[in-house]
Length: 523
Image (cartoon, rainbow, N blue to C red; front, side, top):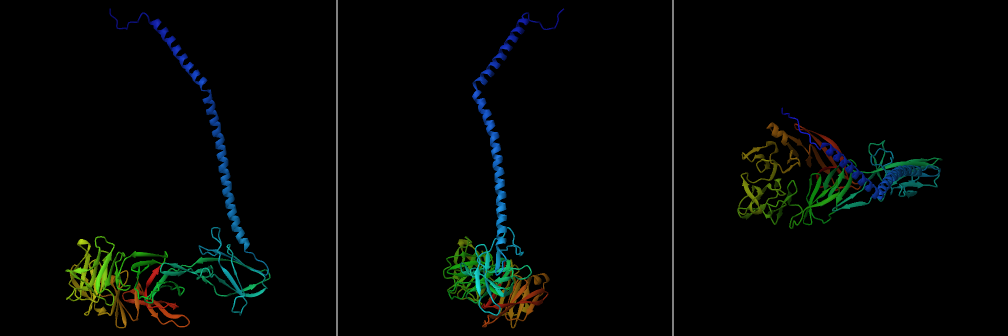
């Protein structure tokens, strides 16, 4: 019978014994190699141990260093607290002495806090009641402390002065003084430095006071001009806060745009930001540009100006170039009523009133064309006295027949009857109000209301001088300044809607010559 079991080799016992011997020899070899490695690398082993111990020691040193740093920082904090306490203690109350401490009160809360700094440079004047001149004036040290000693008990008057802070700062073409005020949490309006004279009783124990000071910054300023220079006028304090100092005796136009004052001088178009106290050259090399006869695009990128009765332009739009404004190969002459009759959609698109030789005045639309030049085309409107862009496709103009809205798409004019033929027309900066002078009244057209209702909506205001800023009117009643500095007033009025308006506050004009109110900037 055949079986299917595998055959067992006859030499199997010998093979197993040989394998066991080989295994023992292999194990012995590995152990030998290990002994050889450890035996030959005792120095390496010692090095690893030493490095490990060094690491533990290093961690201990690091922990000690960190602990010392924290101790030093705590010490610094204690020093700062100590300096803070020392400053307070330096304002002492002693017999026969007045002691004052001044600090910069940034948050105007009337309390000296750790993060606030002493305010140096202040002086204190004292006098006896009824006297005109100061008995003594003492200046503070760098720590903001003023001490007046060797005083008899009795009644005094004191005044806080600071002649250093009254120095005017010069910022390009403008001078702006630094005004500081004394913080008094019990008063709605803080007092300027120099302060008024105030009564003070000095008793046997002496007197001390800690006073906060902060730089005064108004919330808004009126922008006024005398025709050559411009002044920033604080309506709350009735005080000139700064002015231009170009002083070249040239009649000059100033514009208020985006809370900045824009003007032309030394062949340059400049803008000045009162908030940042910086002046910037917007465009230069404007050779031949008169300081009055120019018009500016909303982004301040294109200037149209008059040069020898011709209209010219310069722009930062590369595709438009610069030069004369040409129509049908002829130069376009300017029209002034009394200023250039020009308005802009943007730096590349505008409307203007001009004439070519042998033809009458007409309205042109200008835009960037070929060969880096402004291309112009006439609009079938005819001669106009004033011209403004209200929105993308709507113009406003006036002529000898009346005042009109003009639809560029429909080429239709709609007459605004109430405006009649105004002697003067202005458009508010936000393009919401058309302000026309008609006889002894101003007609202020509420354009958004007209657009919404489709009927005439306006205010009738019987004043001699008016500009509109937002929903507020500014009426100038300026006059020749008198000996006491009284130069008249500016009165506000509020446009309430639906033709209703009411008078607001009157702003006294002190020591400022006003020919025209240009607008108001908010800070």
